[in-house]
Image (cartoon, rainbow, N blue to C red; front, side, top):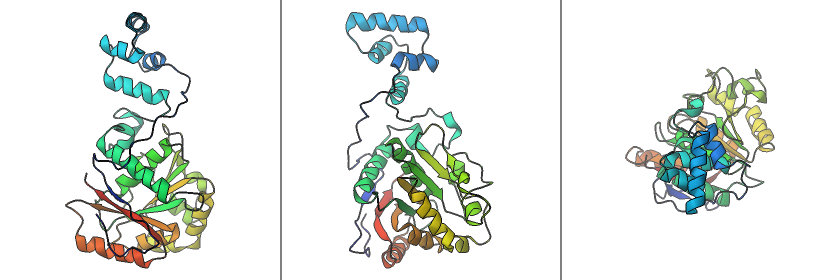
Length: 307
């Protein structure tokens, strides 16, 4: 999908969240975390010590890798092996229900799915075209509701953290926030608390299971969201956080429904627009693209969500 009206300085990214990813996934890091697969499978309750002895005998006799020998003996499943490998290579990967996160977090629960392959391709493009020492903040915008904006922001945050980037996800949708639901966080404190002077940056939650991921929930829904986001404190907060994090992603309200999104885009300096197949109206997409093009922010590109 190509949207017209973007500034010449902007670089268009076209990405469909489907199996045909534009870039190959990155290779696993060469360094292991110091634990062998057998120990991981025993600790997770998938193998008993006597099972390990059987596997080691077959491994030696037939010249197999540990995982292949375990599979041949039908002591574990392929999913068990994938999960153990993810721990060996420090690649966060959770079983369904583990961590208490929403099923929307496919980057954590289904890391080998077509959706996540395409998300990694998008991450590669963003690393090449936007994130650097000068650009650390990106707002995720869409014309309307239920177009995958929060879904994309949450999963991008996970896969950026898996790359080792110090990643912060900010829920700046002060109308209908969702990130606290996706990451199973309290909404008693958050962005609104900081902007109102009721809390400090300790309102940012470090997410377990992911070494480099933090989330700042929206906090209590205020009666004046646009005024809060327009305060100098918001810009100051982003400037301060940019010194602490490598990647800051901001979830926003629906662009065609509220003017909050454009205020956030202006503060962030960059925007990625999300539309959804068979859902987003072309007129709404064009209108938002025109608004973005007229702003001082860089329009990094667009994403067509097919899920």
